[in-house]
Length: 208
Ligand code: OGA
Ligand code: MN
Image (cartoon, rainbow, N blue to C red; front, side):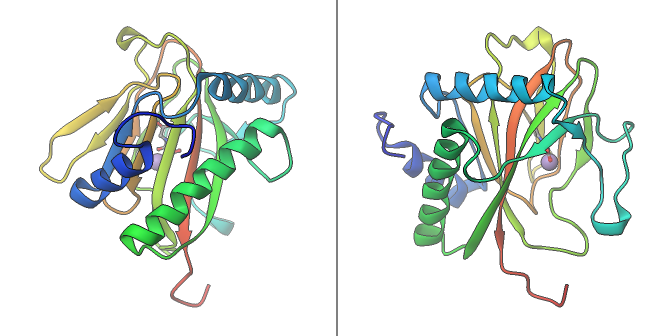
């Protein structure tokens, strides 16, 4: 991503991590100003009643079950605000790099704002649907200033060796992982928890 000045650059660090271990956690991945604009936009949409209870499952099997997940979401489209378009542009740079370096054949990106009210959570799950394996790489970008461990709300990722990694949802942290390989959960928090969650998808293999 062209705004990054760290060495090695952000895209390279993400690609190296994905190639070697299948997941990557990058603090302060985007400029603080953009992160703040995205957080404000998420709050504005929530205040305007534009975020809806998230459902679980797919197609006609969708249902709202707060014992599984309690977040509120809104899918992002192009042309909504400069900040969301900038975000989608940056994430598209990552898509192109993933295809060029790791030959993943990612065709598109779907992404939503998510707001977890205090006390809500998302139980352990995989991001790949049983009947649809197009979701290939997951991204989560956090929007929460001054997040402390005692606020809870960690993303808990289960690694192949059974170890767990907890990631705090601190503003600017970007998490990327292979969607089919890492069961994960969102632990309950004592404060509101905002993020942008998305998936790079491949072309479908079977009839859908
Ligand atoms: C999801 C998810 C993780 C997070 O939306 O599928 O796992 O940390 N989100 O918000
Ligand atoms: Mn998930």
